[in-house]
Length: 601
Image (cartoon, rainbow, N blue to C red; front, side, top):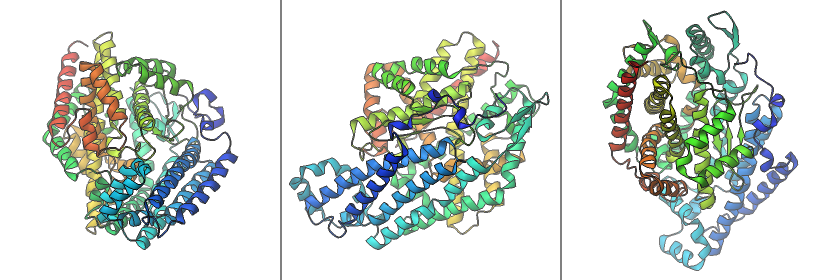
């Protein structure tokens, strides 16, 4: 790992994404910014007339479709430009202008949903008969009317739309502080060599076999977050208060109820997850015991959580090797699937390397009518290969949905958004395990699978518990302070990792660095998606082509059904605890497998 990050202009062009596929130059972006504003004004002219006739309703949705397509171009381009270098003020300005333009259109057209709700059922039925084109928008219209009890009158909808930019201020502050302003300096390894610590490098450094480096990086990283603990607390409190404002305005009983209802999912799905995980916490504690034994340490600390349990086995994978590995692992999904993956690699859909100011982490972002894009911070680790196939899974889900559906119907709910990504990860796991050349390499791969259960099923459920508890505290009037947030997080960490783990005091500040806490109850869906993915990947490998076709039908379905029903297409029924229990059984079996491999190492 190099000591210094390259500047954006120093990164090889072929390892950057090609945003010219959206706009060849910034002038074209500016032109569309003006165009979408004009289209917004045209749509605003329908105020008071949306439900007056079938033709009006059709014209409104045609305009909405044009506007949403343009907004995808404008927002996607601007925000990906910003993410290339978050410290670049010009890029910040582009993103701000894009967000403001979308908010302004939202304000001007906030009357539409209330007017659609005002149409009585018989009249709407006749409209579908009068204008055949309305069938194209029937799913969207039905979804709006499903939320009838939570759509407000025109004045209130306009007020909520106006408040949206204010409500996003906390998430924006979090991003600017964490991605652009927060610097961590240098940390020393066991030989006294200094290495630059960044947000993007934190987890790779925590995977280092150098325990001194891990400890130094862990302490420096969280001590830096702790210096701003009151700012982080105020920022998170602002996020939660914004949710309370919106959920109360929309007549929900809680923030969580509002969040899951927007995805058309029952709160009971998350409650079943909590119950199943707590009933199986012994497996997590067994995993922690195994980790301590395999690392051979007197005390297991939180800076020992990420390092491989096979510490003397290293597997560095450069980006070219990662691409080849991904193609072989995803081969069971068919040649048509692989052809699109190859296109992504060859046509620069991916921004690969970390550079100064680049947004941390990884994501996939769809731009309807163009193609998906992926942001990585690739550091030549096996974990980065899993991240690559994970984000490719998101992109392929988007690609299949957008090819098969209209822009409205392609927008699958967040609840199923992690299924395709995690299915790819599970397929990669089975591929690598089968190709392992000896017991040590096999143990290294099984270690990764165990890590996936720990980080995706258990850890994300723990995150969700933190989010549920802290939102409930705020709703009940308990202040969200740095100390109260620390206590909730620290105690949950102790419960999940058990008595074998030393819960270092610094870990109580981990909540400060989790961006998903600003995504409004997103994280439990990682866990439910992982459960679904374990089942889907196993069936793909066992059943072959018939299951692959079933799976691609799911990928192509967008939001044409509610999320739980969509998963049933792929053979997963989350109305019961069965898939969660079965996944946790696989976790237990993987622990058994690792324990058996220990004797062969």
